[in-house]
Each structure stands twice: as C-alpha cells, then as structure tokens.
Image (cartoon, rainbow, N blue to C red; front, side):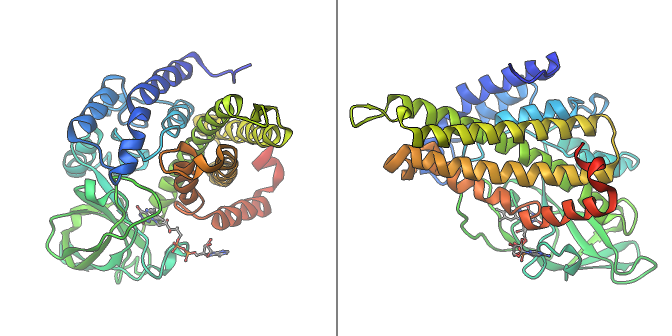
Length: 393
Ligand SMILES: Cc1cc2nc3c(=O)[nH]c(=O)nc-3n(C[C@H](O)[C@H](O)[C@H](O)COP(=O)(O)OP(=O)(O)OC[C@H]3O[C@@H](n4cnc5c(N)ncnc54)[C@H](O)[C@@H]3O)c2cc1C
C-alpha cells in the first residue's frame, strides 16, 4: 500500500514524476558526456516547463510569489527531483525560507535580492566554507569589519556551489569589533563588487553544469544595508538553512535509491546468464531486497520529519531529526548505488549507465551540508540533552 500522503502531496508527486521522466531523464547521458551542460534551448525548455507545472519557490508563501507548500509536499517533490542524475533537476528557483524570514522586514533587501530570487531573476550562492574551516564553522578566518555605514569583508571561500550561475553571494564571517565581535554575520555580496575575484574552478567527481569554485574577497566594501538580520544572527540563519537542506538531501537520496531499484530490478529480470534471468539468483534478490527495505525506512523517516516541521515541533528536536534523516538516507542511497553497480556488472561501470553516475554523485551527500560524522555528533548531543523519547518515538 502506498504511504498515506495527503491528496495535494500525491498530486505534486505525480506531476513532478512525469516531468522528471519525460523532460529530464532523457537528457542525462548527453549532459554526462558534455560536462553537465545541455544546449541552451534544452535548458530553457526545462526551466520553462518547470515553471509551467508550478516548480518555483516552493517554500515561500503565496503572498510573496511562492507556492507556499508544506514541508511534506516539498519532500515529496525533492524525492522525485532526486531521481534524475547530473543535477538536471536544478532547473527552478528554490529560495530558502530562512532568507524570507530574515529579510521580510527590510524593504530594500526584499526588493533587491529576495523577491527577484523568488521570481527566478536572481540567484544566490553560499560562501561559508574555507580552506581551514569546513565542519568547524567557528574556525572561519574571513572577517567583517565595520567602517562607518559599511562593512569591509576579507577572506577566501571554497566549494561555492552554483557560483557560475549566481549573481550574488551569501557571505559568512565573524565580526572583528563592536558589541558582537567574534559572532558571525551574513551579508549579501553582489558578484561584481570590487575586490571579489575568482581564484579557480576545481573539477569534482560529478558532472554538473553548476561548479564549485574558490573565491577571494579582498577589502570588499558593502553597505551596512547588505547585512542580513542583526549583527551576530549569522549562525542562526545558517542552522535554519542546514535543516532545510538536510531534509532536502534526505528526500533526494530516497528518489535516487527508488530510481536505482527500479532500473536494477528491470535489468535483473531481462539479463540472462547460465540460461536464466539473473533476477532468479538469490544473491541478486538479496541486494534488491535490502535496498528496498532500507529505502522504505529512509522514506518514512524523511516524511515523518517533514510532518514534524509542518506541525511546528520543537526546533531543537527537528535539528536532530533532520540530521538522522540526512545521515540515514544518504548512507542508504550510497549502499543502494553500490549494489546497483554490482547488479549491472560491467555495464554498471560505464558512464552512460545510471548506476555509475549515481555511484559518483551520491557520495557527496555524505559530505556536504555537514558530513555524516557531524550529523552523528548532532544526533548524540540531541540524545544526551533531550532523550530518546523526544527524538525517536
Ligand atoms: C561538491 C561540494 C559542494 C559544496 N558546496 C558548498 C557551498 O555551496 N557553500 C559552502 O560554504 N560550502 C560548500 N561545501 C563544503 C561542505 O559543506 C564541506 O566540505 C563539509 O562541511 C566538510 O568540510 P571539509 O570539507 O572542510 O571537511 P573537514 O571538516 O576538514 O572534515 C574532514 C573529515 O574529518 C571529519 N571530522 C571533522 N570534524 C570532526 C569531528 N568533530 N568528529 C569526527 N569527525 C570529524 C569529517 O567528517 C571528515 O570526514 C561543498 C562541498 C562539496 C564537496
């Protein structure tokens, strides 16, 4: 029996599944063979079709031009988007809710960055991680120094995802002085601000059109009006962003595993060795059975966490539950991808094969937005402070 989703979530699931199957999946291999890049006309059509079916600013209330969807509806959509490789699902604006919450009271920031972002006219990227500060965000060496009605920003940022498609950064740095010295603040920094330079664009395991370059910020002067929220609020926004992203990763990993199970099952049924379909061999059955069982567990965890967000449950509990969903679903999807490669045999090692692509692509889901180790630390801290009943009953 399918999970008892509300009718609205089921309708989104059907609509986005069709879009992914008919519009995106057919272009995966072409993207893989072309550095992740599709012809301009194809990308435009994907964006246009996504918009037509309502894929834009899903988390943003309707009064601001978004879709105002529940966390559960968003999870169901992310799951479908996760079924396609090469990040071809990144074809719609996905303004995070924290940005609206932080900027709603600031007319200038709303008009300049947030509303254009919601409309898909502008796009942000996140400049938080540094060469010496990844998991340990408090070790960030970048600085934000107040100078009259401006701040001067310095530092070097790594792995800035989608910077080649963005026109502004969300830049995080501790303040050097004033009453909040040492605490972190976030800033909108337009890419063409003097002092911003692209250092280099490293190659990564996956083949995505979105790059993850390194950027330097040397004496970058931005008006105080670019600071997001109050001085020292930076980490709170970053934690809200992490929760949102971690649940999205969990959902996308469920989608990837679901696709892999479907593909590996249909291959196993038609591939014959020793005179019969390999699906008859218990070794293959066990891999598929374990994959399906683990997918179900991850999906239930992901949906339940989304429902808890919609119910407005305690944010500290949600923080641990998002960590559990992320660590479990991402590690589950990696195991499923490994088994799928094995079931496809030599074909599973070819870049034209979906299992090969997911085998590489899913690896980063155990690293970005907080590694598996960091998720486990969050979960253990939650367990010590709040107890098992609060987190997992
Ligand atoms: C493709 C990609 C895209 C990214 N996009 C962005 C982006 O857009 N913006 C951005 O700011 N960042 C981005 N990141 C950075 C990402 O969030 C970090 O890579 C991640 O948080 C880990 O940091 P690190 O790489 O510095 O590893 P480190 O923090 O140096 O960790 C190295 C290893 O040590 C382990 N470790 C660290 N601390 C502990 C501990 N206390 N206990 C146990 N183990 C520990 C880690 O789990 C890991 O296994 C991206 C990274 C990648 C790979």
